Amino acid sequence: MKDAYSLILSAIDSGSYRPGDRLVESELAERFGVSRTPVREALQRLETQSMLKRDGRSLIVATLDHNQLAELYTVRAELEALAARLAARHATPEEIRVLADMVEDDRRILGDPQLLARTNRRFHHQLHLASHNRYLVQQLDLVHRSMALMARTTLAAKGRDAISLEEHQAIVDAISRRDEAAAEQALRHHISMAFETRLKEEAHLGGEDQI
Image (cartoon, rainbow, N blue to C red; front, side):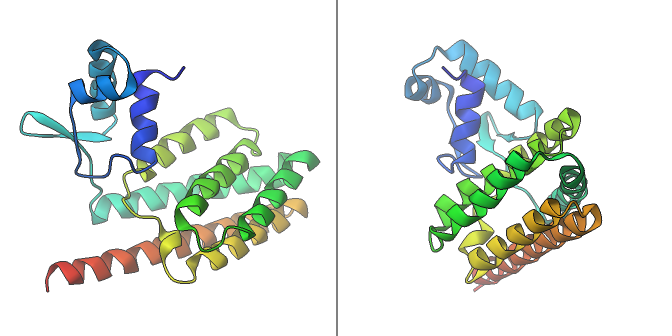
């Protein structure tokens, strides 16, 4: 059974709790069927990791501002590019086939951005594992944990889901050829396009707020 920390983190990651939502210790304990002490410890840990922030006496799910968003994507691009390069060098044939199968499976769920967001996270995690570098995987886990603070998935943007899959395919193709430079370049392009899409979405929503 998952501990309180993992349960709360999963709830944030799945969108059950979104940026700005208030987390109440007693409500969480009741929801997850655990005592309040581990919930309190989990909330303190999440606050230390900047997943939660104080709003008066309450704790709310943190929101990323523009600068934090840019910093996160910069780090993500560098670390994932390294993971792609190492995967091209170290991935086993079985791992490459799994990555290829994941891309094919995702073609069947185009048009379902929430489901694609979940399978996208699994694809990237599998890519991280294929790097065969445990320290890099740990750092990428931290980065992707912070990605949960983004309230919307870029895969909901018009046409982004199909384009993203083609970018995944290019990454897998480069890894299968053992072309480290091409794998890194394909991954950097993928993250750059995702970041650009998110900036356009944020700009659009920001404009609506001012109407």
